[in-house]
Image (cartoon, rainbow, N blue to C red; front, side):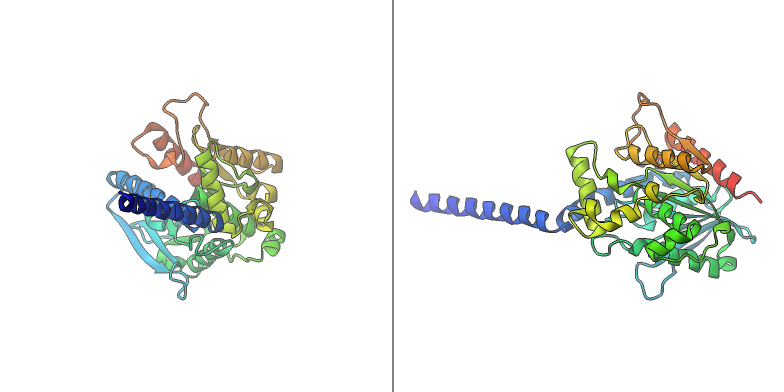
Length: 333
């Protein structure tokens, strides 16, 4: 009997030791939590992409996995366009994933659907955290834009009619790049130049973004944990609220009247809804033209984060139609 008790006690001690080590790891590094988030988000992205497959056109010209940075394995992009010889207005989309997950493959089917509406679409890959940190993705998207300009004719891109777009974390990156393009003083503070001239950036399409790092909280304990993990991973410090990059990267605080026309949308149950509403308030204050798609608080069914990717719902289809109408208007010659 004593031997059995000793063995049980040994197992219990080992379990406690493992739990203590795991708790310490979570406190000391964002990696354990970031990997957990990545696994959940990757499964959700795969389901959303599969659901979009029946909506995709089959007559597109596609360039997949093009290197926009030869020395960077993450520096790849996909291009989708109608089978036409002329250069088209181009939507450059930055995928989401809380800065710690995701890839251009997640949004490829949505970009195929969008290309079927008569534009060239580009999905940009970038390095995710915690492996790479801010401002690496911002610099990479700037590099992707330079590549598109240099190879515009071959890829069917009109570099004079570019719309930057993104979802979730990608919306934040796209919006920050838009500020870099249109505000030289801000670009100097960040230290990133973008080859695209301001006249070439016709607008931005921003879904469910995390624009304001000062709003680093969630609507629940799980939401707060997710946001804290994402920003700790991206900015490289657990005390991300006091990190200088937090204020520098936040879009509303750095937005000026030179920001391009914007389309902004989020669901009524999106835990990041306050970010989109805050961005719209900043656009109003700066006098920037913008369209929005929001929903009443009591809208049913409740529309969560990334609602726009579900084209089997009326709100998802409405979001696509409204985004396309905005893109057509701002890129009209």
